[in-house]
Length: 203
Image 1 (cartoon, one colour):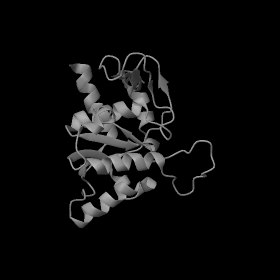
Image 2 (spheres, rainbow, N blue to C red; image 1 turned 180 degrees about the horizontal axis):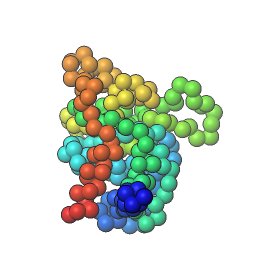
Image 3 (cartoon, one colour; image 1 turned 90 degrees about the vertical axis):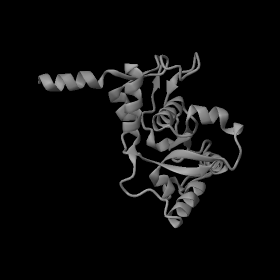
Image 4 (spheres, helix red, strand yellow; image 1 turned 120 degrees about the vertical axis):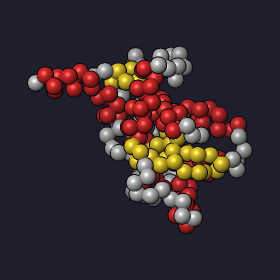
């Protein structure tokens, strides 16, 4: 009916335009392919948008939470495509983390072999392969190891999902200190990205 057609039209509207926001270098495609194997431009932009919207130091999400597996040659992504990229809640929390802890978590997620994964594979898929914001990926070495950063991270990673040991250790430490975010203290990654994207489109 008429209302369904309006909703469908809105879903097909562009919500992310990487080229207009200068988030991508010239000649680099917007892509979410192989998020379990490498840093992707979609992962980088999603995390950058989360970082900027939350006004924090860094943002990370695990590769398995980004599901689209697509390349966007024109750098544009519709709302419907965004929902396909992020079909899960991906409950983000912001926690304090020393720079070296973040670096260790990123390195561990990209090198460790998860339980149940065949280590003889030509390429090792990693559900936990951490995607990180563009700023941190380019400038992580500019600070000091003991710098305290405010970092957005999916809460389930702190509870052991994907077995990223540095994040599991951090989660245990936060619980011991009474600083672990409460069960309702989170915001879905999709909501944060949509909020940021809409601001970009309207300004």
